[in-house]
Image 1 (tube, rainbow, N blue to C red):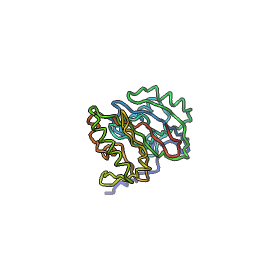
Image 2 (cartoon, rainbow, N blue to C red; image 1 turned 90 degrees about the vertical axis):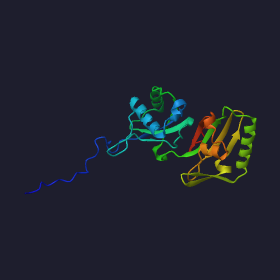
Image 3 (cartoon, rainbow, N blue to C red; image 1 turned 120 degrees about the vertical axis):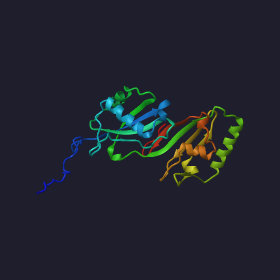
Image 4 (spheres, one colour; image 1 turned 30 degrees about the horizontal axis):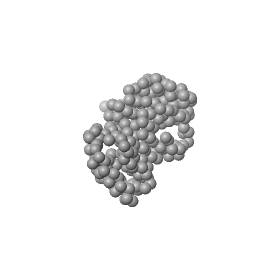
Length: 240
């Protein structure tokens, strides 16, 4: 009894969703705020939300290659769960050359609660992927904050400023930062703690790390709100 000969599966057929070779790509930088209840969604859910917003806005996304193409989008920094932000960055790519003003208007029409589109600008593909340079944070004071705790926080800040480096353990690895260059701003103001974190070559400190170093790990549980107020990207002028 002869066996039927099976033909090997051909790998030469491209995905039906694959964009034609040579399809143009245009990159745009979206700066947005993520506040309110939206701060409790994960970074993955945020990426999915942006994909849905883009489809509702009928954006001509540039798609990745393969059998499961996705819109070309990139976040230079994932925001920790529970942290608000007034200045997040998303780079997305379209296959059509839209004026930045048109894209801004189309995105603002979606009116997603907790998501505010601040600006849209064109960026050059030749510049490569955006890279984080520094982050600014403001942490509101706990509901029961008093003068005694204020004095303790000031002492803890002064101790850190006298150190050359600070280190934290994260997932079995040590993350070290040079205080003078990577933690240039650490100050307790009348109504908030303000922090500026400059990124290094490896892993960088997070705002929760700063609270841990100051002995303030319980602040979020006591009503403090962590807010990223600004992001600077490498190759850009300081964003205010």
